[in-house]
Image 1: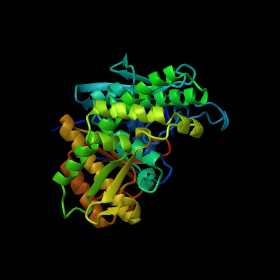
Image 2: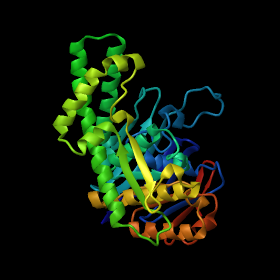
Image 3: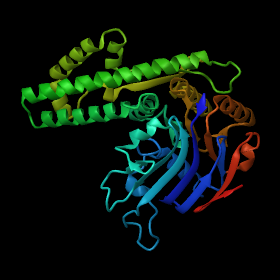
Image 4: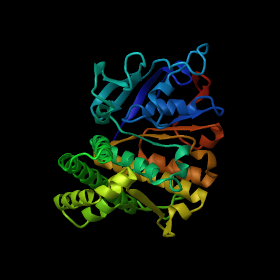
Length: 381
C-alpha cells in the first residue's frame, strides 16, 4: 500500500507562527514542548489540508496571527499554509489561506499554484484524519458532536459526502423558513422533495461507511490489543428504514412524514425527524457496554481503537494510507498502552504526526523525526 506523506510544511502568520517551516520524511513525526508552545497549532495547519475548519473547528478569522499592538478586538491578519505532499497523484503542492480583506468568509485553496474550487479538491491527493483531547468527551456529549465525528469518518472514504450534508442543511433551513412564514403547500412540496432526496443520500452514505468500518473492526480484532474493539451502529429513523427497504421507497415515506409533520414542525420551529438528528451508537465490544457507561480510560482506548480502524479502512479503500494526526494522545496512556499504540502505528504504515509535553513518552517510537516546539519556533530535537 502507498503512503500519503506531507514532506514540507510552511506556515505564514498562522496562530503563534509568524513564519515557520519543517521538512520531514515518511515516518512518524513527534513534536514536543511545554504546554502552550504551539504543538497543536502545527497539527491544525496540517488538518487544513482537508475540507472543513480544521481539527479545532475554528472560525477562519481566528486563525491568523494578530498584530500585538492592535489590541484584542482587532481583526485577524491574513494567514496561509503550504505543503509539499506525496499523495495519490504523486508530488503536489497544496496551499490554503484566508485574507479577511479579500476572501469574505471563504478560504482560498490552490494546487500546484492553480486555484481550486474548494478544499474538497485536496481529497484527490491525500486524506487527513485526527484524534484530539477535545474528542475525549465524544460519548458523553450531545448527538451533534457524534454526527460531526461520523460525517468526518464518511468524508474520508466518500469525498462527495460533505457536499450532500451541506445541501441537506440548506434545504432544511429553507423548509423551516417556509413553515415559519406559512409558505404555500406547493413550495413546501418542492423543498421537501429535495430534503428527502438529500436525506436518503446522506443516510445511505453513513450506513455504508458504518457497515464497512464494523467489518474492518471485526476482521482485525486482536484480543491482545490494549484497545478494546468497538461495536458501532446508527440510531435514526431513515437509517432503520434504509436497512430493509429500497432507497426510492424510503424517500417517498420520508416525504410523507415531512408533509404530515408540518403542523408539529411549524410549532417547534424546526424539523423534528430526519438524518440531521441521527446518533452514532458506540459500545465496548467485549463488555457489550455502551461507551457512555465505560470508564474514562476505556472511552479513551475505544476512541484510539476506532481511529486506528478507520485509518486502516481508508487505506484499504483508497490504496493509500492517510496522514494521521494524534494530538497529546500518549499523555494518559501507561507504558503498556503506549507500546501497544506504537506497535499498531507501525503496522498501520501511515505517516503519523504526534504531540506531547514529555519527550521520554516517545522514546520507544522507532524511526521518528523529533522536533522541539517553543513559542513561534520549530527546531530539530
